[in-house]
Each structure stands twice: as C-alpha cells, then as structure tokens.
Length: 504
Image (cartoon, rainbow, N blue to C red):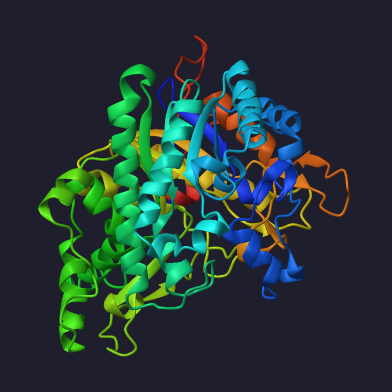
C-alpha cells in the first residue's frame, strides 16, 4: 500500500479540473441574474470568515478568456463547471429566461470546444434560485418538475456541445448539510426527517432529468448523463471484528448508497438504511419509517438512470460500531456508528479532512464490487491549503502525487474501470463556509487586487506534467538496466586472513 506504483493510464483518459458557478462566477446580480439561496445566505450570514460572499469572487462571469487561457495552459482534456440556474432562469422558471446568462455559457462552451476541451457540466451545484426556495425548495415535490424544465432547456440549448452531464453535485451534502445540520442554505435544522424527504425528491428529480435526456436528446446528441456523488472511504476500526465491518459498510451505505443504490442497483434504498431507520422509527413509536419508500413504478423509473459513475472524494475516516441514542431523531444517530480521523495521515487546511491517499484506491475497488464494475470518473479530488500560499504549495503536489497514484493502482492493479480524473480546482475561489481563508486552486487569485490576477502555483506545473505523461511512467533512474560488462572484466571473490584463518 505504501509503495509507489509507476505506470500510465490508457489513451483517451480524461484529465480535467473543476469549478462551480457560485464559487467562481461573481456577477451575482449582473445582467438580470436574480439571487440564489447562496446569495441570500452569504448576504445575511456572520459565520463565514471575513463575512465573505460570492458577489465578485474570481469574476469569471466577466473573464471567460482568462479562464480559457488557464485551462489551455494546463492542457487539460476536460473542464467541469456548473450552470447557475438563477442566471439562466432568474426566478427558476422558463418564463423568466435571461438571454445574457445563456450568452455567457455559450461563450464559455464555444471557447472550450474551439480548444478541444471537453465540457463536463453540472446542472445543479447547490445554488437554487431564491424564488424557488420561497415556494419550499427541495422539500416541495413541485421542484422536481421545475428542475426538469430547466434541464430540458439546457439539454436543448447547450447539448450540441455538451456530451457529459451531471444532474446534481453531492446530493448527500444538499440533504444533510442543508436540511439536517442546517449549516448550508436553506439552513433547515431538522435532522430526523427533512434530509430523507429532500433526498427522496432529489433522486426523483435526477431520474426525471435522465429520462428527459433519454427520450428527447440522446439519439441526436449522443451524450452521457450521471450524478456526482460524494464518499469518504471508511476503514473499520478492527477488520477482525464482524460488527466493525458491518458498521463500515453501513457508513458507506448511508453516505453513498443512499443515492447510488437506487440509481445503480435496484431503484430502492440500501437494506441497511431501510432496516436502521425503520427500526429506530418503530422504537420512537412512529407509525411509519422516517425513510420514505418508492412504489414499484418509481423503482423501475429510477433504476439505471446513470451512464457512468461519478465520485467526489477527499478523505478517509475510521469507523466503529456504536449504539446511538433514539432522541433527538437524526440521520446521524440512525447510522449507529462513530467516526474518527485517520490519525497517521497529514492534516490539511480543513478540519477533519486529512490527506489519506490509500483510501481512494479502496473506495474505487468497493464501488467496482458493489455496483457491478461501472465506468468511473473521479469528478472531484483535491486539497485545501491556506490562501496565503501563493506559489510553493508542495503539500498539494504531494496530495496529487499520492492520490492520483492510488487511482492508477486501482486501474492497473485492481482492474477498476477508471476513465477520468478531475482535480479540484482550477483556481482559488469562494470556499463555502470557509470563505476565502483556504483555497483548492492550481492558480492563486489575489482577491485583494481589483484586477484579481491569477498566478499558477507549483502544483499547476506538476499537474501539467502528469497530464503530459498520462500518469507516472517509470523514471530512468528507477529502471533496471540489462547488459554485459566489457570482455576482459575481472570477476573474483575476496577474503581476509583474520576472517578465514583457523590457527590457534
């Protein structure tokens, strides 16, 4: 596990970088754009360092050419970005169509295609139009059809150039951080029921958008549709204790299986979730499980609604079994386990996000076995460093060197069908609850300068080389040399009198 593996990915491997609309675009109210829930939250929050927001951020809305320049310099094969729903449909509905928002994405897409960079487009990266939140947001089942209307428009408008779509980014984060912990907008703190209800609607919304593409666009456009799910690897505290193994599996089912099991397996939630939540609900004297159920028609509608498996991954946790409380009701307590950090690995600029490279290989192998050997794209992977680090981000270089190598091991040694690796991220940007204190970027952005100059870090040069080499070919000084010594080379042996003498 600790050994470095030299080798290459197959030809056509998709090397890329990622970003998201709210994190980089700025222009929060430019040219007819209306607020998203992240605009509303950041404008009223005092919990983000420096009371930061995404009003300007990297100002990508006004700097398409600069973004394209950085992407070309890295020589990436693909660029993952997201569409701002409230920039295209300011109030969330087609009737509010904002052509200037559409023009922005057309400029970006035309530039990417001109430079032979494949667009990988996320339709929803957390920034719901505030107007739809006012109607109940993802707790309201009507949002399913409204989202489908938005997806339909994007497929028809951009689908001639976009051949890789992701419906949602990290639905588990939307459901748990947005509706359980209440840390992300819409800041609902109802951990026992709201996350399950919201996830139920997100899964249905994903499936509906997938079928819309299937029915109306796949034949003419020939693209792929998936969903970007997130998972930490979880290592059992003691692999020799069966209930610790079950706890680790349960952790994966509650985080990843919550969405992957319905979509990639049988249209329904994992048995571990149904049993845990159902059992706890019964003990809480509720008349039915807090985990909603799909009917047979819904199951067949949801099953198989992804063409490839997209995974976002950052860290690894150690898990062990724990019998947790019944009150208050919570998704967290439903899991009956406790998580700790992997203490032997380096810390990063974000708490509880240690750099544990070997976990990626194990996660990829688990996905292969659990979901029937799908084609896998690592759609986010990266590390945060303090934004004061302008150039020498050797910690990030070490992170990529080790994590990419574990993906290479998974592909070359374990037979995992890894098709692409999308590094996070193109440049330092608004990092959600961390504001501008930390950055994931290959490029440093000077947010104190109104011109927002972008400077490549050491890691940008490193990643460029990895892409160029398509992995880590064995360096010359590591290779075994075969050959002969010269003809009159003298072979001999040696002794020393003291070592061989047997005289008294």
